[in-house]
Image (cartoon, rainbow, N blue to C red; front, side, top):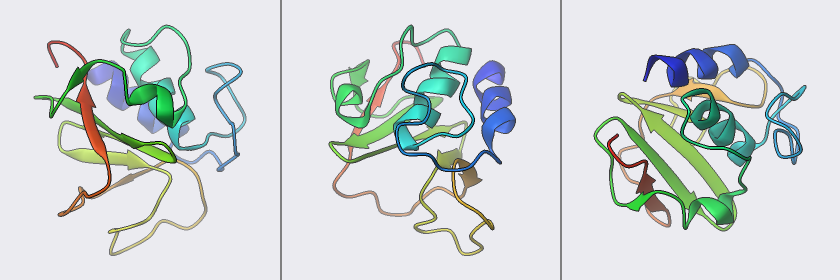
Length: 121
């Protein structure tokens, strides 16, 4: 858990770059699934970067106790220990200046996304 959160802190001010984090985990900026891939890799839960469609078949179906990835064919974000890492400011009452991965409040309603989680988390 700590490694995933620390990884999110490390990239939380990086810019949004389409495809960022897909060629390699270390990038100058990240897109949605590149951000999710980065934190999961740091926690030892992912060996190669995924896109949002790949996450639809990753892990186990449903909510995790500590980590849940929400995904659909066009977007992915992760909730870790009650906070959301997302490149989208949707549902954020105080959007952070800039684009890219940011810690945001959990959304009250999550429709159109499939919930997946790593085994044991």
